[in-house]
Amino acid sequence: MIGTINGKKVEFSKDQTVLEVARANGHFIPTLCELADLDHTPGTCRVCLVDIKRRNDVNHRIVTSCTTPMEEGMAVLTRTPKVRQMQRLQVELLLADHNQDCASCVRHGNCELQDVAQFVGLEQTRYNYPEFYERRTRDYSSPSVVRDMSKCIRCFRCVKVCREIQGIDALVITQKGLETEISVRDHLPLNESDCISCGQCILVCPVGALAGRNNIEDAMDLIYNPELITVVQFAPAVRTAMGEEFNMAKGENVEAKMITALKRLGVDVVLDTNFAADLVIMEEGSELLHRLKNKGTLPMFTSCCPGWVNFVEKNYPEMTPNISTTSSPQQCLGAMAKTYLAEKMDLDPDRIRVISIMPCTAKKGEAQRPEFQRNGRPDVDVVLTTREFSRLLKREGLDLAKLEDSQFDNPWMTDYSGAAVIFGNTGGVMEAAVRTVHKLVTGNELDAVEYTDLRGDALRREATVDLGPALGEVKLAVVHTLKEARRLMDEIKSGNSPYGFVEVMACPGGCQGGGGQPRSKHSYHGTARERSQGIYNIDKNRTIRQSHNNPMIKRLYADFLKKPLGHKSHELLHTTYRD
Ligand code: HC0
Ligand code: SF4
Image 1 (cartoon, rainbow, N blue to C red):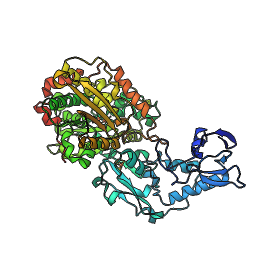
Image 2: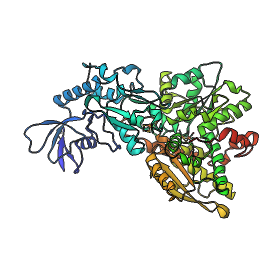
Image 3: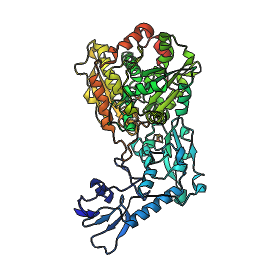
Image 4: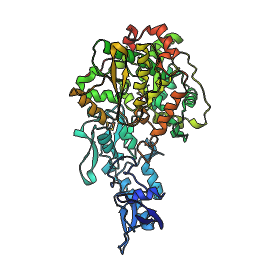
Protein backbone atom coordinates (compact mmCIF):
# COMPACT_ATOMS: atom_id res chain seq x y z
CA MET A 1 0.00 0.00 0.00
CA ILE A 2 1.11 3.56 -0.66
CA GLY A 3 0.60 6.93 1.05
CA THR A 4 2.68 10.00 1.85
CA ILE A 5 4.30 11.39 4.97
CA ASN A 6 5.45 15.01 4.82
CA GLY A 7 5.06 14.82 1.04
CA LYS A 8 7.30 11.77 0.64
CA LYS A 9 5.93 8.53 -0.72
CA VAL A 10 5.81 5.65 1.81
CA GLU A 11 5.01 2.00 1.37
CA PHE A 12 3.38 0.05 4.13
CA SER A 13 1.36 -3.05 4.84
CA LYS A 14 -2.18 -3.40 6.14
CA ASP A 15 -2.58 -3.02 9.93
CA GLN A 16 0.40 -0.70 10.35
CA THR A 17 -0.32 2.47 12.30
CA VAL A 18 0.66 5.93 11.12
CA LEU A 19 3.26 6.00 13.90
CA GLU A 20 4.84 2.72 12.79
CA VAL A 21 5.02 3.78 9.15
CA ALA A 22 6.45 7.18 10.09
CA ARG A 23 9.08 5.57 12.30
CA ALA A 24 10.05 3.04 9.63
CA ASN A 25 10.59 5.91 7.20
CA GLY A 26 12.63 8.15 9.49
CA HIS A 27 9.92 10.66 10.45
CA PHE A 28 10.14 11.30 14.20
CA ILE A 29 6.88 11.60 16.13
CA PRO A 30 7.13 12.07 19.91
CA THR A 31 5.42 9.53 22.17
CA LEU A 32 5.24 9.02 25.92
CA CYS A 33 3.01 5.98 26.31
CA GLU A 34 3.89 3.86 23.24
CA LEU A 35 7.11 1.87 23.58
CA ALA A 36 8.67 -0.21 20.82
CA ASP A 37 8.90 -3.93 21.71
CA LEU A 38 6.29 -3.64 24.47
CA ASP A 39 3.00 -5.06 23.29
CA HIS A 40 0.97 -2.26 24.76
CA THR A 41 -2.19 -0.45 23.67
CA PRO A 42 -1.11 3.14 23.69
CA GLY A 43 -3.21 6.29 23.17
CA THR A 44 -3.17 7.78 26.66
CA CYS A 45 -0.52 10.51 26.39
CA ARG A 46 -1.87 12.08 23.19
CA VAL A 47 1.41 13.75 22.22
CA CYS A 48 1.85 11.76 19.00
CA LEU A 49 -0.61 14.01 17.16
CA VAL A 50 -0.37 14.29 13.37
CA ASP A 51 -2.39 15.88 10.59
CA ILE A 52 -4.01 13.40 8.19
CA LYS A 53 -6.08 13.60 5.05
CA ARG A 54 -7.64 10.38 3.83
CA ARG A 55 -8.06 9.71 0.13
CA ASN A 56 -11.67 10.90 -0.03
CA ASP A 57 -11.51 13.51 2.73
CA VAL A 58 -12.07 17.18 1.98
CA ASN A 59 -10.63 18.36 5.27
CA HIS A 60 -7.54 17.60 7.25
CA ARG A 61 -7.94 16.26 10.76
CA ILE A 62 -5.68 15.88 13.78
CA VAL A 63 -5.39 12.36 15.18
CA THR A 64 -3.14 10.32 17.49
CA SER A 65 -0.74 8.49 15.19
CA CYS A 66 -0.32 5.46 17.49
CA THR A 67 -3.99 4.48 17.22
CA THR A 68 -4.70 5.45 13.61
CA PRO A 69 -4.17 2.82 10.89
CA MET A 70 -2.29 4.04 7.83
CA GLU A 71 -4.54 3.82 4.77
CA GLU A 72 -4.05 3.67 1.02
CA GLY A 73 -3.66 7.20 -0.33
CA MET A 74 -3.46 8.80 3.10
CA ALA A 75 -1.41 12.03 3.35
CA VAL A 76 0.20 12.60 6.74
CA LEU A 77 1.88 15.77 7.98
CA THR A 78 3.84 15.61 11.23
CA ARG A 79 5.13 19.16 11.73
CA THR A 80 2.41 21.67 10.71
CA PRO A 81 1.87 24.76 12.93
CA LYS A 82 -1.45 23.29 14.09
CA VAL A 83 0.15 19.95 15.02
CA ARG A 84 2.96 21.67 16.89
CA GLN A 85 0.54 23.95 18.73
CA MET A 86 -1.71 21.06 19.76
CA GLN A 87 1.24 18.93 20.86
CA ARG A 88 2.51 21.86 22.93
CA LEU A 89 -0.89 22.27 24.59
CA GLN A 90 -1.02 18.55 25.32
CA VAL A 91 2.39 18.65 27.01
CA GLU A 92 1.26 21.67 29.03
CA LEU A 93 -1.80 19.75 30.19
CA LEU A 94 0.35 16.78 31.20
CA LEU A 95 2.63 19.11 33.13
CA ALA A 96 -0.31 20.83 34.85
CA ASP A 97 -0.92 17.64 36.80
CA HIS A 98 2.76 16.71 37.21
CA ASN A 99 5.06 17.58 40.07
CA GLN A 100 7.33 20.16 38.46
CA ASP A 101 10.15 19.84 40.96
CA CYS A 102 12.42 18.69 38.15
CA ALA A 103 15.78 19.85 39.52
CA SER A 104 15.74 17.26 42.31
CA CYS A 105 14.08 14.49 40.26
CA VAL A 106 15.98 11.23 39.73
CA ARG A 107 15.18 11.47 36.00
CA HIS A 108 16.46 15.03 35.54
CA GLY A 109 18.29 15.10 32.22
CA ASN A 110 17.02 11.66 31.32
CA CYS A 111 13.25 12.21 31.38
CA GLU A 112 11.07 11.47 28.38
CA LEU A 113 8.60 14.22 29.37
CA GLN A 114 11.45 16.77 29.41
CA ASP A 115 12.54 15.50 25.98
CA VAL A 116 9.06 15.97 24.56
CA ALA A 117 8.68 19.43 26.17
CA GLN A 118 11.90 20.41 24.40
CA PHE A 119 10.76 18.84 21.13
CA VAL A 120 7.51 20.81 21.06
CA GLY A 121 9.33 24.02 21.94
CA LEU A 122 7.66 24.65 25.27
CA GLU A 123 9.27 27.71 26.85
CA GLN A 124 6.98 28.23 29.81
CA THR A 125 4.30 26.14 31.42
CA ARG A 126 1.17 28.14 32.00
CA TYR A 127 -0.52 25.62 34.25
CA ASN A 128 0.54 24.00 37.49
CA TYR A 129 -2.06 22.47 39.80
CA PRO A 130 -0.38 21.11 42.93
CA GLU A 131 -3.81 20.51 44.44
CA PHE A 132 -4.15 17.65 41.94
CA TYR A 133 -0.74 16.00 42.07
CA GLU A 134 0.17 16.65 45.69
CA ARG A 135 -2.58 14.35 46.93
CA ARG A 136 -1.34 11.44 44.85
CA THR A 137 0.44 8.54 46.57
CA ARG A 138 4.14 8.56 47.41
CA ASP A 139 5.20 5.13 48.56
CA TYR A 140 8.63 4.61 50.11
CA SER A 141 7.76 1.29 51.77
CA SER A 142 9.90 -0.94 49.53
CA PRO A 143 13.67 -1.22 49.96
CA SER A 144 13.96 -1.44 46.16
CA VAL A 145 11.31 0.59 44.33
CA VAL A 146 9.96 4.09 45.07
CA ARG A 147 6.56 5.14 43.70
CA ASP A 148 5.89 8.87 43.41
CA MET A 149 2.52 9.21 41.71
CA SER A 150 2.77 13.02 41.76
CA LYS A 151 5.01 12.51 38.73
CA CYS A 152 2.97 9.82 36.97
CA ILE A 153 1.58 10.63 33.52
CA ARG A 154 -0.57 7.48 33.41
CA CYS A 155 0.97 5.90 30.33
CA PHE A 156 0.20 2.42 31.78
CA ARG A 157 3.51 0.92 30.59
CA CYS A 158 4.32 -0.25 34.14
CA VAL A 159 0.94 -1.95 34.53
CA LYS A 160 1.52 -3.80 31.28
CA VAL A 161 5.03 -4.98 32.15
CA CYS A 162 4.10 -6.16 35.63
CA ARG A 163 1.04 -7.99 34.30
CA GLU A 164 2.15 -9.34 30.91
CA ILE A 165 5.90 -9.90 31.24
CA GLN A 166 6.18 -10.76 34.91
CA GLY A 167 2.67 -12.14 35.50
CA ILE A 168 2.71 -10.46 38.92
CA ASP A 169 -0.09 -7.94 38.34
CA ALA A 170 0.78 -5.87 41.39
CA LEU A 171 -0.11 -2.57 39.69
CA VAL A 172 -3.66 -1.58 38.77
CA ILE A 173 -5.49 1.40 37.32
CA THR A 174 -7.89 2.98 39.81
CA GLN A 175 -10.40 5.83 39.60
CA LYS A 176 -11.43 7.61 36.42
CA GLY A 177 -10.93 10.87 34.55
CA LEU A 178 -8.78 13.40 36.37
CA GLU A 179 -8.59 11.11 39.39
CA THR A 180 -7.05 8.21 37.45
CA GLU A 181 -4.09 6.77 39.31
CA ILE A 182 -1.80 3.77 39.05
CA SER A 183 -2.20 2.05 42.39
CA VAL A 184 -0.92 -1.07 44.03
CA ARG A 185 -3.54 -3.81 44.07
CA ASP A 186 -5.78 -3.58 47.17
CA HIS A 187 -4.15 -0.20 47.93
CA LEU A 188 -1.35 -1.94 49.81
CA PRO A 189 2.05 -0.38 50.37
CA LEU A 190 4.38 -1.88 47.77
CA ASN A 191 6.37 -3.92 50.30
CA GLU A 192 3.20 -5.66 51.50
CA SER A 193 1.89 -6.36 48.01
CA ASP A 194 2.69 -9.12 45.50
CA CYS A 195 5.54 -6.97 44.11
CA ILE A 196 8.81 -8.90 44.08
CA SER A 197 11.04 -5.84 43.52
CA CYS A 198 12.29 -6.78 40.03
CA GLY A 199 12.25 -3.14 38.88
CA GLN A 200 11.01 -3.92 35.36
CA CYS A 201 8.33 -1.25 35.82
CA ILE A 202 11.10 1.29 36.47
CA LEU A 203 12.76 0.44 33.16
CA VAL A 204 9.66 1.47 31.19
CA CYS A 205 8.55 4.50 33.25
CA PRO A 206 9.05 7.57 31.02
CA VAL A 207 9.32 9.94 34.00
CA GLY A 208 10.37 9.81 37.66
CA ALA A 209 7.18 8.18 38.95
CA LEU A 210 8.88 4.81 39.44
CA ALA A 211 12.49 4.76 40.51
CA GLY A 212 14.98 2.59 42.29
CA ARG A 213 15.51 3.51 45.89
CA ASN A 214 18.35 6.02 46.05
CA ASN A 215 21.27 4.88 48.23
CA ILE A 216 23.99 7.07 46.73
CA GLU A 217 24.31 9.20 49.87
CA ASP A 218 24.60 6.05 52.02
CA ALA A 219 27.46 4.81 49.83
CA MET A 220 29.23 8.18 49.92
CA ASP A 221 28.92 8.31 53.72
CA LEU A 222 30.85 5.05 53.88
CA ILE A 223 33.43 5.85 51.21
CA TYR A 224 34.29 9.26 52.67
CA ASN A 225 34.49 8.08 56.29
CA PRO A 226 38.20 7.74 57.13
CA GLU A 227 37.43 5.37 60.00
CA LEU A 228 35.99 2.75 57.67
CA ILE A 229 37.46 0.32 55.15
CA THR A 230 35.21 0.24 52.11
CA VAL A 231 35.08 -2.85 49.96
CA VAL A 232 33.21 -2.61 46.66
CA GLN A 233 32.07 -5.51 44.49
CA PHE A 234 30.40 -5.30 41.12
CA ALA A 235 28.19 -7.91 39.48
CA PRO A 236 28.79 -9.85 36.25
CA ALA A 237 26.19 -7.98 34.19
CA VAL A 238 27.13 -4.45 35.24
CA ARG A 239 30.35 -4.38 33.23
CA THR A 240 28.76 -4.87 29.81
CA ALA A 241 25.92 -2.37 30.37
CA MET A 242 27.39 0.53 32.26
CA GLY A 243 29.21 1.96 29.25
CA GLU A 244 25.80 2.83 27.78
CA GLU A 245 25.47 5.61 30.37
CA PHE A 246 28.70 7.15 29.04
CA ASN A 247 28.04 6.84 25.30
CA MET A 248 30.39 3.88 24.93
CA ALA A 249 29.80 0.99 22.56
CA LYS A 250 26.87 -1.25 23.47
CA GLY A 251 28.01 -4.41 25.22
CA GLU A 252 31.56 -3.12 25.76
CA ASN A 253 33.27 -4.56 28.84
CA VAL A 254 34.12 -1.57 31.05
CA GLU A 255 35.43 -3.59 34.00
CA ALA A 256 38.94 -2.05 33.81
CA LYS A 257 37.54 1.49 33.81
CA MET A 258 35.19 0.71 36.70
CA ILE A 259 38.21 -0.33 38.77
CA THR A 260 39.87 3.02 38.02
CA ALA A 261 36.69 4.92 38.88
CA LEU A 262 36.33 3.14 42.22
CA LYS A 263 39.96 3.81 43.11
CA ARG A 264 39.51 7.49 42.19
CA LEU A 265 36.53 7.68 44.52
CA GLY A 266 38.74 6.48 47.33
CA VAL A 267 37.38 2.97 47.73
CA ASP A 268 39.86 0.87 49.72
CA VAL A 269 39.40 -2.58 48.19
CA VAL A 270 37.84 -3.40 44.80
CA LEU A 271 36.58 -6.96 44.47
CA ASP A 272 34.60 -8.83 41.86
CA THR A 273 31.23 -10.52 42.43
CA ASN A 274 32.44 -12.95 39.75
CA PHE A 275 34.85 -14.44 42.27
CA ALA A 276 31.88 -15.23 44.49
CA ALA A 277 29.95 -16.63 41.54
CA ASP A 278 32.70 -19.24 41.19
CA LEU A 279 32.41 -19.92 44.92
CA VAL A 280 28.65 -20.33 44.61
CA ILE A 281 29.11 -22.91 41.87
CA MET A 282 31.36 -24.95 44.13
CA GLU A 283 28.79 -24.88 46.94
CA GLU A 284 25.61 -25.12 44.86
CA GLY A 285 27.02 -27.82 42.58
CA SER A 286 28.02 -29.86 45.63
CA GLU A 287 24.60 -29.24 47.14
CA LEU A 288 22.88 -30.56 44.01
CA LEU A 289 24.98 -33.72 44.10
CA HIS A 290 24.22 -34.13 47.80
CA ARG A 291 20.49 -33.82 47.14
CA LEU A 292 20.66 -36.28 44.25
CA LYS A 293 22.65 -38.84 46.25
CA ASN A 294 20.56 -38.53 49.41
CA LYS A 295 17.11 -38.20 47.88
CA GLY A 296 16.83 -34.58 49.05
CA THR A 297 14.17 -32.12 47.89
CA LEU A 298 14.10 -31.86 44.10
CA PRO A 299 14.02 -30.11 41.77
CA MET A 300 16.58 -27.82 43.30
CA PHE A 301 16.07 -24.15 42.39
CA THR A 302 18.88 -21.63 41.98
CA SER A 303 18.86 -19.03 44.73
CA CYS A 304 20.86 -16.14 43.31
CA CYS A 305 17.99 -14.07 41.91
CA PRO A 306 16.29 -12.26 44.80
CA GLY A 307 13.21 -11.39 42.74
CA TRP A 308 12.70 -15.10 42.15
CA VAL A 309 13.24 -15.95 45.83
CA ASN A 310 10.66 -13.28 46.76
CA PHE A 311 8.30 -14.80 44.19
CA VAL A 312 8.59 -18.31 45.64
CA GLU A 313 8.10 -17.08 49.19
CA LYS A 314 5.02 -15.03 48.27
CA ASN A 315 3.36 -17.47 45.89
CA TYR A 316 4.65 -21.00 46.59
CA PRO A 317 5.83 -20.94 50.23
CA GLU A 318 5.59 -24.71 50.42
CA MET A 319 8.40 -24.91 47.86
CA THR A 320 10.99 -22.80 49.68
CA PRO A 321 12.88 -26.02 50.62
CA ASN A 322 13.49 -26.48 46.88
CA ILE A 323 15.56 -23.28 46.81
CA SER A 324 19.26 -23.98 47.10
CA THR A 325 20.54 -23.07 50.54
CA THR A 326 23.64 -21.53 48.97
CA SER A 327 23.45 -17.75 49.30
CA SER A 328 23.79 -15.57 46.23
CA PRO A 329 27.21 -14.41 45.05
CA GLN A 330 26.47 -10.90 46.33
CA GLN A 331 25.92 -12.25 49.84
CA CYS A 332 28.76 -14.78 49.71
CA LEU A 333 31.18 -12.06 48.71
CA GLY A 334 30.05 -9.87 51.62
CA ALA A 335 30.44 -12.74 54.08
CA MET A 336 33.91 -13.64 52.75
CA ALA A 337 35.08 -10.01 52.77
CA LYS A 338 34.23 -9.65 56.45
CA THR A 339 35.90 -12.93 57.47
CA TYR A 340 38.42 -14.46 55.05
CA LEU A 341 39.62 -11.19 53.53
CA ALA A 342 39.83 -9.51 56.95
CA GLU A 343 41.99 -12.41 58.11
CA LYS A 344 44.25 -12.38 55.04
CA MET A 345 44.70 -8.59 55.00
CA ASP A 346 44.78 -8.24 58.76
CA LEU A 347 41.82 -5.86 58.79
CA ASP A 348 39.41 -5.18 61.65
CA PRO A 349 36.14 -6.78 60.45
CA ASP A 350 34.14 -4.22 62.45
CA ARG A 351 35.54 -1.44 60.28
CA ILE A 352 34.80 -3.15 56.94
CA ARG A 353 31.76 -1.99 54.97
CA VAL A 354 30.70 -3.74 51.76
CA ILE A 355 29.06 -1.85 48.91
CA SER A 356 27.66 -3.73 45.91
CA ILE A 357 27.02 -2.43 42.43
CA MET A 358 24.26 -4.56 40.96
CA PRO A 359 22.07 -4.60 37.84
CA CYS A 360 19.17 -5.36 40.12
CA THR A 361 16.79 -3.44 42.40
CA ALA A 362 15.79 -6.55 44.37
CA LYS A 363 19.41 -6.98 45.56
CA LYS A 364 18.79 -3.99 47.86
CA GLY A 365 16.12 -5.98 49.67
CA GLU A 366 18.23 -9.14 49.66
CA ALA A 367 21.06 -7.35 51.49
CA GLN A 368 18.62 -6.23 54.20
CA ARG A 369 17.19 -9.69 54.92
CA PRO A 370 17.59 -10.81 58.52
CA GLU A 371 19.07 -14.09 57.19
CA PHE A 372 22.13 -12.14 56.03
CA GLN A 373 22.94 -10.24 59.23
CA ARG A 374 25.79 -11.50 61.37
CA ASN A 375 26.33 -10.21 64.90
CA GLY A 376 23.88 -7.42 64.14
CA ARG A 377 25.73 -6.32 60.97
CA PRO A 378 24.71 -7.05 57.39
CA ASP A 379 27.13 -8.95 55.13
CA VAL A 380 26.45 -6.30 52.47
CA ASP A 381 25.91 -2.76 53.77
CA VAL A 382 24.76 -0.77 50.74
CA VAL A 383 23.60 -1.78 47.26
CA LEU A 384 23.76 0.61 44.32
CA THR A 385 22.26 -0.18 40.94
CA THR A 386 24.19 0.30 37.71
CA ARG A 387 22.16 3.48 37.14
CA GLU A 388 22.94 4.82 40.61
CA PHE A 389 26.64 4.14 40.26
CA SER A 390 26.63 5.95 36.91
CA ARG A 391 24.89 8.93 38.53
CA LEU A 392 27.40 8.90 41.36
CA LEU A 393 30.32 9.01 38.90
CA LYS A 394 28.73 11.81 36.90
CA ARG A 395 28.13 13.96 39.95
CA GLU A 396 31.74 13.36 41.08
CA GLY A 397 32.91 14.56 37.66
CA LEU A 398 34.17 11.19 36.47
CA ASP A 399 33.51 10.30 32.83
CA LEU A 400 33.96 6.55 32.62
CA ALA A 401 34.74 6.70 28.90
CA LYS A 402 37.76 8.93 29.51
CA LEU A 403 39.29 6.97 32.39
CA GLU A 404 42.37 4.83 31.91
CA ASP A 405 42.18 1.07 32.45
CA SER A 406 43.26 -0.55 35.72
CA GLN A 407 43.54 -4.15 36.76
CA PHE A 408 42.30 -5.69 40.00
CA ASP A 409 45.10 -5.53 42.53
CA ASN A 410 43.59 -7.49 45.40
CA PRO A 411 45.29 -10.90 45.44
CA TRP A 412 42.55 -12.77 47.32
CA MET A 413 39.07 -12.31 45.88
CA THR A 414 39.21 -11.00 42.33
CA ASP A 415 40.11 -13.75 39.89
CA TYR A 416 37.21 -15.29 38.04
CA SER A 417 36.47 -17.94 35.47
CA GLY A 418 34.42 -17.58 32.30
CA ALA A 419 31.74 -19.61 34.07
CA ALA A 420 31.30 -16.84 36.63
CA VAL A 421 30.72 -13.99 34.22
CA ILE A 422 27.99 -15.80 32.28
CA PHE A 423 25.89 -15.70 35.46
CA GLY A 424 24.80 -12.33 34.07
CA ASN A 425 22.83 -13.99 31.23
CA THR A 426 19.76 -16.17 31.57
CA GLY A 427 21.01 -19.77 31.59
CA GLY A 428 24.48 -18.77 32.78
CA VAL A 429 24.25 -20.11 36.33
CA MET A 430 23.06 -23.45 35.01
CA GLU A 431 25.77 -23.61 32.33
CA ALA A 432 28.43 -22.75 34.92
CA ALA A 433 27.05 -25.41 37.27
CA VAL A 434 27.09 -28.06 34.54
CA ARG A 435 30.74 -27.32 33.77
CA THR A 436 31.67 -28.00 37.41
CA VAL A 437 29.19 -30.73 38.39
CA HIS A 438 30.31 -32.81 35.42
CA LYS A 439 33.89 -32.59 36.61
CA LEU A 440 32.97 -33.30 40.24
CA VAL A 441 31.10 -36.45 39.28
CA THR A 442 33.12 -37.84 36.39
CA GLY A 443 36.55 -36.42 37.13
CA ASN A 444 36.69 -35.15 33.55
CA GLU A 445 36.13 -31.74 32.03
CA LEU A 446 33.19 -31.46 29.62
CA ASP A 447 34.21 -31.98 26.01
CA ALA A 448 32.43 -28.83 24.91
CA VAL A 449 32.70 -26.04 27.45
CA GLU A 450 29.79 -24.10 25.99
CA TYR A 451 26.53 -25.83 26.77
CA THR A 452 24.55 -24.15 24.03
CA ASP A 453 21.21 -25.89 24.67
CA LEU A 454 20.91 -23.66 27.70
CA ARG A 455 21.48 -20.43 25.76
CA GLY A 456 19.03 -18.30 23.80
CA ASP A 457 15.92 -16.19 24.22
CA ALA A 458 13.21 -18.85 24.65
CA LEU A 459 11.41 -18.33 27.95
CA ARG A 460 12.18 -21.93 28.86
CA ARG A 461 15.13 -24.04 27.66
CA GLU A 462 15.85 -27.61 28.62
CA ALA A 463 18.84 -29.93 28.54
CA THR A 464 19.86 -33.26 29.98
CA VAL A 465 23.18 -33.97 31.63
CA ASP A 466 24.51 -37.47 32.18
CA LEU A 467 26.01 -37.77 35.66
CA GLY A 468 27.27 -41.32 35.29
CA PRO A 469 25.96 -44.71 36.39
CA ALA A 470 25.27 -43.80 40.01
CA LEU A 471 23.21 -40.66 39.45
CA GLY A 472 22.01 -41.17 35.87
CA GLU A 473 20.58 -38.45 33.69
CA VAL A 474 19.37 -35.20 35.23
CA LYS A 475 16.95 -32.97 33.38
CA LEU A 476 17.70 -29.25 33.56
CA ALA A 477 15.45 -26.26 32.94
CA VAL A 478 16.29 -22.61 32.53
CA VAL A 479 13.50 -20.07 32.83
CA HIS A 480 13.37 -16.30 32.64
CA THR A 481 10.47 -13.93 33.41
CA LEU A 482 8.17 -14.77 36.26
CA LYS A 483 5.21 -15.38 34.01
CA GLU A 484 7.03 -18.44 32.69
CA ALA A 485 8.25 -19.31 36.20
CA ARG A 486 4.63 -19.44 37.40
CA ARG A 487 3.81 -21.90 34.59
CA LEU A 488 6.73 -24.08 35.61
CA MET A 489 5.83 -23.95 39.29
CA ASP A 490 2.27 -25.02 38.56
CA GLU A 491 3.61 -27.98 36.57
CA ILE A 492 5.91 -28.97 39.43
CA LYS A 493 3.05 -28.63 41.90
CA SER A 494 0.82 -30.90 39.84
CA GLY A 495 3.56 -33.53 39.65
CA ASN A 496 4.12 -33.04 35.91
CA SER A 497 7.70 -31.94 35.94
CA PRO A 498 10.71 -34.04 34.99
CA TYR A 499 13.36 -31.60 36.20
CA GLY A 500 16.12 -32.15 38.72
CA PHE A 501 17.65 -28.68 38.64
CA VAL A 502 16.00 -25.40 37.65
CA GLU A 503 17.47 -21.95 37.11
CA VAL A 504 15.09 -19.01 37.29
CA MET A 505 15.96 -15.39 36.67
CA ALA A 506 13.09 -12.98 37.22
CA CYS A 507 14.05 -10.42 34.58
CA PRO A 508 13.88 -10.94 30.82
CA GLY A 509 17.35 -12.00 29.66
CA GLY A 510 18.58 -12.52 33.23
CA CYS A 511 20.60 -9.94 35.15
CA GLN A 512 21.72 -8.13 32.01
CA GLY A 513 18.06 -7.08 31.66
CA GLY A 514 17.76 -6.28 35.37
CA GLY A 515 15.64 -3.48 36.75
CA GLY A 516 18.72 -1.53 37.87
CA GLN A 517 20.35 -1.40 34.45
CA PRO A 518 20.50 1.61 32.10
CA ARG A 519 17.25 2.31 30.27
CA SER A 520 16.86 2.38 26.53
CA LYS A 521 14.50 5.29 26.03
CA HIS A 522 12.69 4.18 22.93
CA SER A 523 12.40 0.45 23.53
CA TYR A 524 11.96 -1.90 26.48
CA HIS A 525 15.14 -3.99 26.30
CA GLY A 526 16.81 -2.31 23.36
CA THR A 527 20.40 -3.31 24.11
CA ALA A 528 19.85 -6.83 25.46
CA ARG A 529 21.53 -8.59 22.58
CA GLU A 530 24.73 -6.56 22.77
CA ARG A 531 24.97 -6.82 26.56
CA SER A 532 24.45 -10.54 26.43
CA GLN A 533 26.96 -11.06 23.63
CA GLY A 534 29.44 -8.92 25.57
CA ILE A 535 29.13 -11.33 28.48
CA TYR A 536 29.63 -14.43 26.32
CA ASN A 537 32.67 -12.78 24.71
CA ILE A 538 34.30 -12.30 28.12
CA ASP A 539 33.79 -16.01 28.85
CA LYS A 540 35.26 -16.98 25.50
CA ASN A 541 38.40 -14.97 26.16
CA ARG A 542 39.10 -16.17 29.69
CA THR A 543 41.91 -18.67 30.05
CA ILE A 544 40.08 -20.41 32.87
CA ARG A 545 36.46 -21.20 32.10
CA GLN A 546 35.37 -23.43 34.98
CA SER A 547 34.74 -22.32 38.57
CA HIS A 548 36.66 -25.26 40.07
CA ASN A 549 39.79 -24.19 38.16
CA ASN A 550 39.88 -20.64 39.59
CA PRO A 551 43.16 -20.55 41.57
CA MET A 552 41.85 -18.03 44.11
CA ILE A 553 38.89 -20.32 44.82
CA LYS A 554 41.26 -23.26 45.29
CA ARG A 555 43.27 -21.20 47.78
CA LEU A 556 40.11 -20.07 49.62
CA TYR A 557 39.21 -23.72 50.21
CA ALA A 558 42.77 -24.75 51.08
CA ASP A 559 43.33 -21.91 53.56
CA PHE A 560 39.92 -21.19 55.01
CA LEU A 561 36.78 -23.08 54.02
CA LYS A 562 38.45 -26.48 53.73
CA LYS A 563 35.73 -28.10 51.59
CA PRO A 564 32.39 -27.33 49.93
CA LEU A 565 29.45 -27.84 52.28
CA GLY A 566 31.91 -27.95 55.19
CA HIS A 567 31.34 -26.42 58.59
CA LYS A 568 32.56 -22.92 57.70
CA SER A 569 30.62 -22.90 54.43
CA HIS A 570 27.44 -23.74 56.27
CA GLU A 571 27.99 -20.96 58.71
CA LEU A 572 28.92 -18.28 56.17
CA LEU A 573 27.57 -19.24 52.75
CA HIS A 574 24.31 -21.07 53.30
CA THR A 575 20.93 -19.96 54.55
CA THR A 576 17.34 -21.13 54.83
CA TYR A 577 14.59 -19.03 53.33
CA ARG A 578 11.56 -18.59 55.48
CA ASP A 579 8.06 -19.13 54.29
FE1 HC0 B 1 23.28 -11.23 38.94
FE2 HC0 B 1 24.38 -12.78 40.54
S1 HC0 B 1 24.34 -13.08 38.32
S2 HC0 B 1 22.12 -12.41 40.51
O1 HC0 B 1 22.07 -11.60 37.77
O2 HC0 B 1 24.02 -15.60 40.99
O3 HC0 B 1 22.06 -8.89 40.23
O4 HC0 B 1 25.01 -9.70 37.11
O5 HC0 B 1 25.48 -10.28 40.68
O6 HC0 B 1 24.48 -12.23 43.50
O7 HC0 B 1 27.26 -13.33 40.40
C1 HC0 B 1 22.53 -9.70 39.63
C2 HC0 B 1 24.26 -10.22 37.76
C3 HC0 B 1 24.72 -11.01 40.24
C4 HC0 B 1 24.47 -12.47 42.39
C5 HC0 B 1 26.19 -13.12 40.55
C6 HC0 B 1 24.13 -14.51 40.88
FE1 SF4 C 1 5.72 -5.39 39.25
FE2 SF4 C 1 8.40 -5.84 39.31
FE3 SF4 C 1 7.42 -3.31 39.35
FE4 SF4 C 1 7.08 -4.89 41.50
S1 SF4 C 1 9.03 -4.14 40.70
S2 SF4 C 1 5.52 -3.56 40.57
S3 SF4 C 1 6.81 -6.92 40.52
S4 SF4 C 1 7.23 -4.83 37.65
